[in-house]
Length: 451
Ligand code: PLP
Image (cartoon, rainbow, N blue to C red):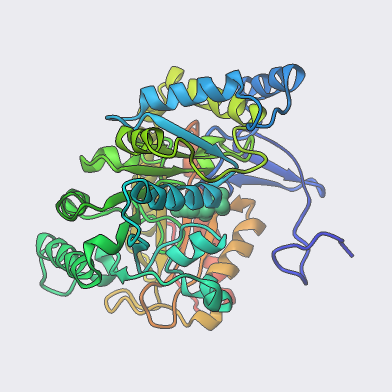
């Protein structure tokens, strides 16, 4: 029996033994194509020599120094680089150890920003119904993932919620995309007015929705409209780019494709690309300035924040992405992946939607395509598919459907930015076999997905 408390207490997963490039190997000698980078983490694949060298050098020089006493060169350089590369005046960086911690920091930073101006009534954050912002209590409260929230509801703060921007599921028959977008913005405005702008800290959203709904990009103009409302009513725009940021969608930040500048940006996953646990909040100048001019301290902190080795790893990741022009590669390889997915699954009777941006793509699986009827959640098709994929030597990130039919089972693909065309073809082929096997396991014989 393992003494580790695993995610599933009655099952011990295979033991990961080694990894390089896009391949992970377990202790039994089986190898897996890591097509999801874990959960959209490993943007440079595994074992990148330059990132490893930067980490080794940092460990040899300085493994740890508490931020109450010192800063360190790696953290300073990383912050400078992130500030230089971020658009506009998003040039203040707070380093933590992961996405949930970064979300918590952003929420508190938002609250303190208004407190410094004597606006004590500001305590509300508006968020969206389908969203995931992390598993710590503040981040979980902001997220709308019913399954993750349910056991902990009594511990969670109240969060006013609006509809997600999710065309495939929520745009009405006959409604144009721009009418749908306008309706979403009207709902957000109503929500702001109903709660009173003077009570609101900000609006929180994932620019491209990650795991909860599966790589859902916003409609054209949605975030521009959101930004306008935030400005009009004097509330902050807080974008969660833990999954979609750091190049995953083909630009360093997904919001760059939306033509908006948020007040706070939350980062994780691809920032350290799996080499070290690290997250960050980027804040615009007006936020940092108000705290600097006011109390002079952000009332927050963690023991491992600004960790030298984590910062060195993230800095090396950034350098490789820039030097090897990997943002351009994401756009090109993302287009290839999309084409392969359309070829393989475009007519599949149980693939309702293929969507995403760059190298963040998802398939939504449905019982019936025209009505978009999801599979019975009790079948747990996503979990079955994860298993059949692993049996085919493929890692994909699965998510379940919802009983209310707001979405079906889906899987996420997030291969490394360095993935080759032949690896993309291999991923698609194995996924096709895995889907056929999964459907027959839940007793849904279907024509082979590969055409
Ligand atoms: N925000 C988003 C959009 C995420 O996808 C995640 C993790 O999946 C988080 C926040 C939380 O990040 P972490 O798991 O590093 O705490």
